[in-house]
Length: 424
Ligand code: GUN
Ligand code: FE
Image 1 (tube, helix red, strand yellow):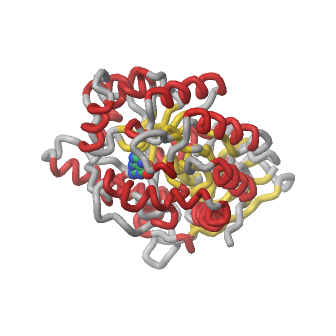
Image 2 (image 1 turned 30 degrees about the horizontal axis):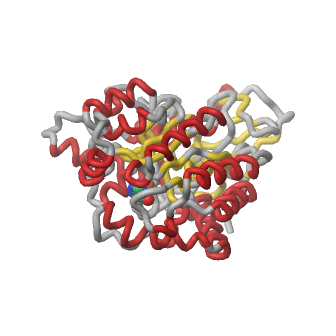
C-alpha cells in the first residue's frame, strides 16, 4: 500500500468537482484505490509509505474514446476540405502505408509515446485493415503499460482497393488480435466497422455476430456531416435513419461507441436512447473539418451518455485537455447561436466526460473512489498568479488554467493502474 498526498481534484458526478486540498489517495499493490481522505481525516500513521506531491495537483488520467493511430503523421495538417474529400485526399493514402510493418512501427511508436506524454492512459483506437500492423500496435500499448481497445478496421466498399478487406479477412484479423492480446491485461480488441459508406450489409452482419459471440465492444462513426448522411441514405434506402442502419444489424449496444453525432434525427436520438449507445464528442475534429456543432446538451438531456475523443488526425492534437476546452468553446458558440436557450457545457461536465465516463469503458477507471484503478496525473502549474492559500476555489482555478493553458511539461507524473508510466 502507498498513499499519495496532494491537491486532489476529480468528478464523482458531472455536476461538480470534489476537491481535497492536501488530501490522500491510498492505493494497494495491485493499483486499486483503497481509500480517499481529506487531509484531517487520514487514518494511517507510519505503517504506510506516503508519496508527498507537495503543492501539485493530483487528477485522474485522461481517456481518449476516439482516435486514429495511423493518422498520426497527418496530425495538425491537411484540413482544407470536408470529410469525404479529406478521407480520399489525405487519410486513405496515409492509412494504406500501414501495409509496411516498418512504417507502422515508426509511426505507431511515436503515437503511443505522444499519447502518454499528453496524459492519456486509455484509448479506444482505430488501426487500419492491416493485421500485422494492428498486432504491433497492441504490442506497443502493452509494452508501455497503458490501456487500449484496438480496432482492426473493416471496410469493403467505396474505398481504394488497397484499403479494402473481405468479410473473412476482417473477422479473421480480429480473431488474431484477440488471440494475440489474450495475455495483455490492459489491451483488448474492439469491433470496428469504419462507417456505413465503407461497410457492406454482409460486413455489418458478420461484425455484429462476432461482437456478440466474443462479447466485444463496438466503435464506429455516426452522423458526422450532412453529405455523409445523405450518402448513407442513398446506400441504404430501406433504413429509417443513419443510426437505424447500425441498429438493423445489432451494432447499437451498451458497449458501442459512436463518434460525432453532429446531426442526429429524432429517429437516431430514439435509437441511441433505447440501446444505451455512447456518443463520443470530437469537437476539435468537427471544427477542423467544418462538420458542424454537435448538439451535446440535447443528447445529454435525452439521457444519452457522451464522452470525448481527439479524433486525430481530423482533430489536431492528442491532448484531451485541448479537447475539453474545445468542447466548452463549441458549446458556448452553440449557446450564442441559440440565443442562450441552450446552456453551454461546464468544466466539470467535460472533465467527467474525459475521466469517469470515458474510463468506464475500461473497467473501474477515471475516478478517485474506492475500488477504482489508480490512473492519475500529477500536475505542477503553481505560479505567482495563483493564491498561495490552498482552498477549493484556488485549486479549481489552477485546474481551469491547466485545462485551458497547460502543457505537457507541467505533467510531472503519469500512473496507469498504479504503475508509473515514464515518458521518453
Ligand atoms: N469517417 C470515416 N472515417 C473517418 C475518419 O477516419 N475520420 C473521421 N473524422 N471520420 C471518419
Ligand atoms: Fe474518426
